[in-house]
Amino acid sequence: MELFTPEIGLVFWMFVVVVLLCILLGKFAWPMIIKSMTERADLIDKGVIYAQEAKKNLDNAKAEADKFIIDAQKQQTEMLREAARLKSQLIDEAKAAAAVEAQKVMDAAKLAIEQERKEAELQFRDEVSKFAIEIAEKLLRQQMADKDAQSKLVDKLLSEIESKN
Image (tube, rainbow, N blue to C red; front, side):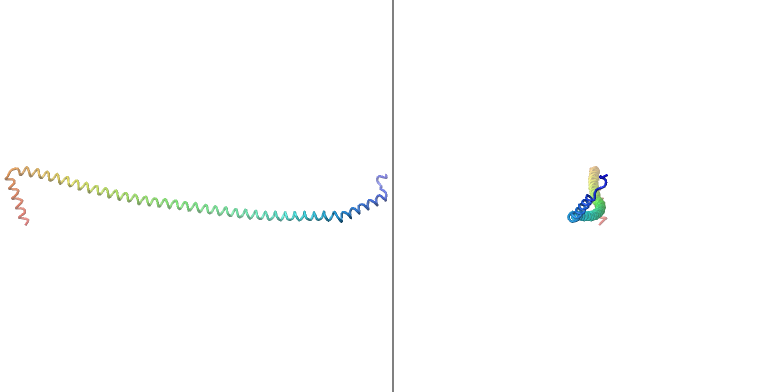
């Protein structure tokens, strides 16, 4: 049973070695271990703070991006409205210009038709008067073929002139 019950001297030296080991570790190793653990804890705390700030910045950036998107959509909507207004304005202006131009063409056509009608009327009158003169001339030649008819006509015309004066 000697294996299970150590002697007092062995226990004493084991106790001395453990105490010396604890003193040495406490004087040299533990401060370094605690210092590195404190630094690690500080580093972790800084990382958590940095992550929280990054999350806040990300949230702010997302909010700003959403605001920019909404502003861009509003501007797009306004631009589309303006383009539609300009389109309808241009169409209205083009219609008005076309109506004015059509009216000018219609007026010019009416004027040209009126002038053509007057020219045709004058030409018709000229032709009718020419025909009337030719007919009158032919009739006069037939009636004035003999001298008696000529003298009767001259007398009649002179009497009409005298009666008017």
